[in-house]
Structures are given as C-alpha cells and as structure tokens.
Image (tube, rainbow, N blue to C red):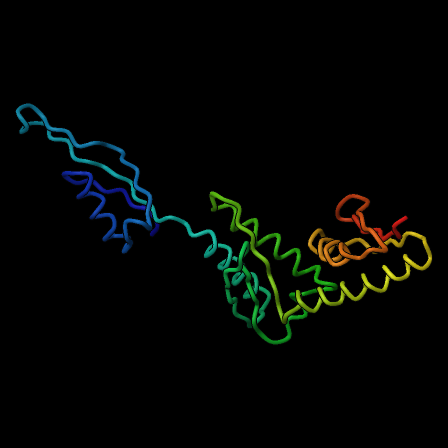
Length: 206
C-alpha cells in the first residue's frame, strides 16, 4: 500500500492516521488536502471533517535498482547490485559469477541495460539522475584498452600524416579517447557520423 485517503476532525489528525497506516514518516510522503474541515451552524450542525490523500514518495534510485534486480532475476543470473554514490553519478556494480552475458560484446549489453535503468530512475526523479552500470570491473578494463588503442593509433597518425578512423563507439567511450589524447601535442581528435555509428578520427596536427 503506497497511498491512502483518510478523513478526520482536523488535517493534522488525518495525516497522522495516514502515516500510521503507511508505516511512514512525514518526510517520506506527499500530502494532498482534498477537503478542509468546516463547522456547521453554531459549530454543532453539519460538521465537515478534513479529508487528505497521503502517498509515499517514490525513491527513483530504489526504483532503478529494483528494475535492474528484476532483469537479473528474469535472466536467471545470480548476482547482487551494490550501489555507490560518486561525485556526479551513482555506480550500480553488479556482483556475481560469470557475468559475461550481462556485459555482452564490447559492453553492448551493459550499455543497453544502463540506458534502461537510467530511463526507469529518471521517470521518477525531479532532477537528472545519472547511473553507471559495471560488472567484473569491466569499465576500468575497457578504459585501459581504449587508452592503449588510442596511443597506438595516435602514433600511427602522427607518423603517416594520414587521418585514422576508429570503429563506431558510444559517447562515453569516445569521451575516454578524446580526453586521453587531449594533451598530445602531435595529434588532434574529432568525431564524425551520427549515433549509433558515430566514430572518432585521429589526425596529425599541422
């Protein structure tokens, strides 16, 4: 039960009764006053009670986690989700054994699942909620792989003087390469194409 409608002599009494029914605290709910109490003639006849609707606030982070756990369960994957608050995002770390199916080829399944989890969370949030999914430390391993690839191709572009095109990548992975090569004095990077086929070009500086 997430929402109740209660009548009582006063608004405060109605809210208090509703909180007991919901087993919730005041800061966990939203209160809508449906009817103000009123007194009849001489305060005795036609007394009208207060009527309120009290609903438990939806926690967007909890809803996102619940959705992810439901997906894992439906996929018959035995794993838990550990949530950690970072500087500007929440990390949902999927902890378990044999999570390759969750990661997918070059992280495509993880990216798709991350999109869905963010969609669910932001559906219930008043401000933008950023959630990053990880499994088996894939994000850090992929970051290192991309940085090593960027170094090799930057050296190739600098030596040949010809632009080098990388395969299409997600915006997150393109950012890793752009950032890594930003301080390189011999090359520059830019993106071309449209998602999901947008890719990076590494070019020697003139």
